[in-house]
Amino acid sequence: MRLLAALSIVALLAAEPAAAQNAGAFQAATPALAASLQVATGANRNLLGLDVAADSTLSGAAWWVMVFDAASVPGNGSVTPNKCYAQASGVTQFLLPNADVGPRFQNGIVVEVSTAGCFTLTQSAHAFISADYQ
Image 1 (cartoon, rainbow, N blue to C red):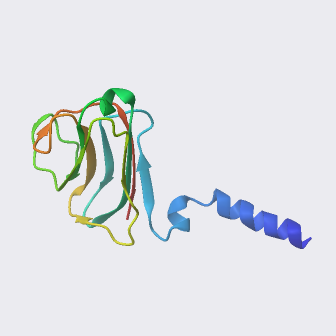
Image 2 (cartoon, rainbow, N blue to C red):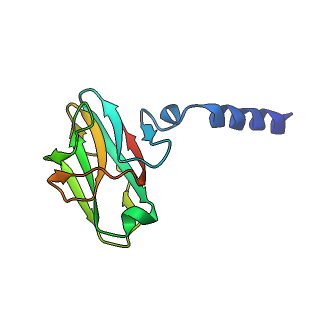
């Protein structure tokens, strides 16, 4: 009987949303290859971790991961991101490890993948984007 009770508890924990298991942390991810991800909207959000996996089309040249304090996804053109991470040609993965408390954003969190540098957004829908936030 104890084994059955233990298995029931494990099953309940597995069914519990990740947000409840991680004390207020949430996850957002693209359902397919994309150029951007609206991670969260609203004030006082923290980016806890970020994972961007590029396909071979994007990784064939230099590319950039940009993070914006924004309520919506910026369009192509001149931009000023809050964070920008350059990726060399041939690199297929960008990982910002999970932190207990990450940078705080006042309007929302948007992640973009670009092929034109940190201050010119040229969206490229060739990446899986996943983020953990609070």
